[in-house]
Length: 402
Image (tube, rainbow, N blue to C red; front, side, top):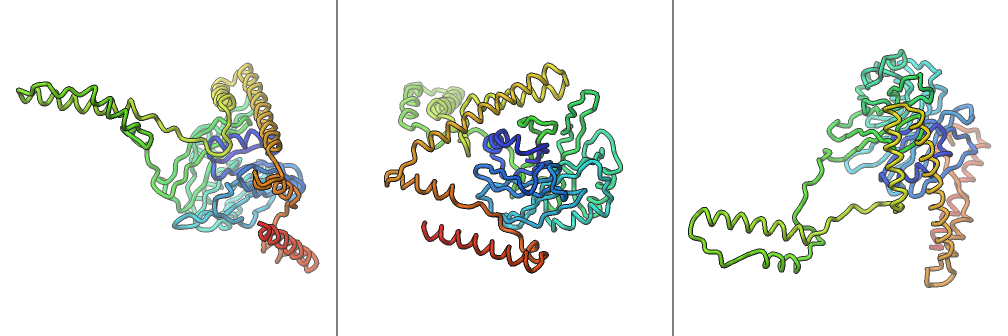
């Protein structure tokens, strides 16, 4: 998923719910508004981010990736005109670099600046975000100079732009026209392994976009089957015996065909009657029905507002968003309270209280990249190496304790 959050901290709980319910593996964020003092965490995910070079609460990008995805962080790209965060994922047959990007609107980037950034990502990548560059080539309403320069750059290095073809930016001012400025750019990934979809799950002036990336060709939905692992075969046998009449005389070919057809229908009906549907289990946090319905209603109202731009629909959307945030916050507080009540210091819960205390007291340290270490002076480098050794010592002690 790619999304311009316009300030990530204020959307933490809302985004966590969408990451879980939509089972997002990698989320590319534009406009985090982070500084060096910012900190945020998503359950089940690791977060990497790049701030604005001025260390002010504006711009910035991030990559939020599932903890169980094998990956490592790439070098940050941090300029006034482009802030990009990238990770490298090791897939089955190759490695791929997903990157989140934000390009502030006031900087009129040229082709050579885009080429410099594209060369930074390697030979196979997919990056997405808010480019603030319009071009009818990827579905924008018009073409700007910035969009023309970006298109020339991606064509030179044989990249492709992927979008929904629908507006992704919805200005608060009703006199301004919505347009498409959020999209993906890919290189060395066949189009038949990809599928782009729009989303209305998050409330902001930008719509998220979803990209399904598969190691295999994207297949259509599976056809329904007669039986599955939950079929009640004893009930199936009894039901079929009640339907089949073995005393029917077969005196002609037409009569035989009718009875064969009836026997096939009887088998199908008996199988369907005794085979319950297996619904896909919700991974991550199993949100209650009320919150899932609120998310669906929020999505529906947001789509209606984008179509009508009516003030009363916008008011309803804002109210639903605030209600959703309250419900998610209340659910989180209840979950924490329940978790704390169940903590004990005995063998029945595997000493859960002790383990929770150790986890809370463990310091959070971010390991600097090797390139950042090598680019520092001797004193700074010695301090960073000392921090690295301290981190490794804490980690080793933790592993020995386990």
